[in-house]
Image 1: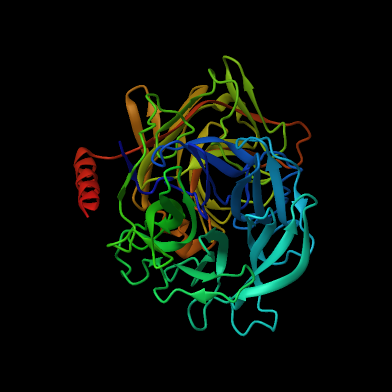
Image 2: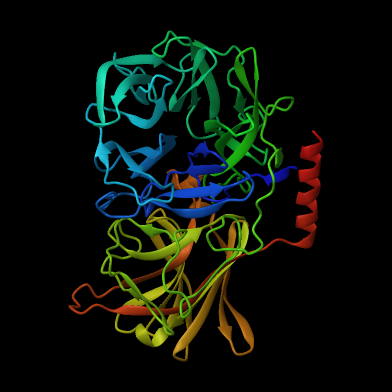
Length: 538
């Protein structure tokens, strides 16, 4: 039996994947930067169908993010399993540095962070050796002084895993595969046969991103690079290739002894990346004691045959990546783990009232600020989609505002905002706001929609005769990493804020529903299916 995995296996903003296999189960965690909760935990039985079973960091005490810019916070986690315990190690670049949390269940709950004294740099990973010892591997600036931006080293040090303390000498073991390399990062350590292997990325997170490997018979080196480095990259395929920025990988072996690699990549639209870095999968074989990625191709494919039984679910859940998401707040009791918030919004920023819907506090911090704002959203995972919500507009008066938003960061976003029975379409580019159109809402309840077709947005309001166009053909190329910078993809959701910062009582916006619906024509479906089949033939 086999199953077909379609790339990306985690579409949308799922960067820096780390994976581990535990028996019949597979787990992936990804970076979330300044989104809360932190580090989604994805689970699969067949590597093709994934479901989010929780988040690693669910309490503010685990994840302080006060006033952090959206591309700060949590960088590059690693998940590992050893003797009944799951370990997740990560860097909070805004508060505290490198830390480890533990749990006896993959879905959590996880412990409070154990911050690692002396673990400088970023991108930490753990390796458990055959003799029971644990080792820390990470990156830090060149100890002799950086000669250029990104002149960093990969280092290894023994870790007392019982007391979460680094012990012994710090060994700078690898500087990257290329001469004059920039940003050797995301290292992972493995052992296969008589060799230890360092798998790492280099070249930065953009077009020159690549995956390289080195090996040694001693854990502290000396490490030799593979003459075939980089073992996978798309930097030689040109700017028009549909999958780019390939890098930051992790390897694992299934119960049948077959090896796989997960890595990040992007799918730009006309040179602009709005979905962020996504998670892809490839097969790995071993030749001359070196890993070979997608042998015979050396590049990512749109489809990959996995030699495992299919575990596809008969029902579709909001916790699955790459599916339509619908929320009737009058019928749910809690927010699912796939929902994202920004920074540390506070425990009381929303409430679900049975039979009535969601009450979202109108934060004193505007959605365009770096404060703890009121926001609930999901990841953008395709180039054509629609979001919509139904709001109790009677709850929005005297400066209270709420609506829909497509959010890249606080300085780059587009929103359809309701306030004082008026709807506003507002685009923020590089911190500068432009109001496109306004409309009278009318009635106590309003349904508003935003439709994205590539790099263009169209806004509608629902009337008794159907959708009414309010504003359209608005360019959102500024909501891309190429223009806005940073490391995140767009998220789509609902928000509420209060323009009257002198008001002493809290205002709340009432939401009855929210949805995220993907568009794909029959012609596009057939074209994708044809491309999948061509990949499988190769």
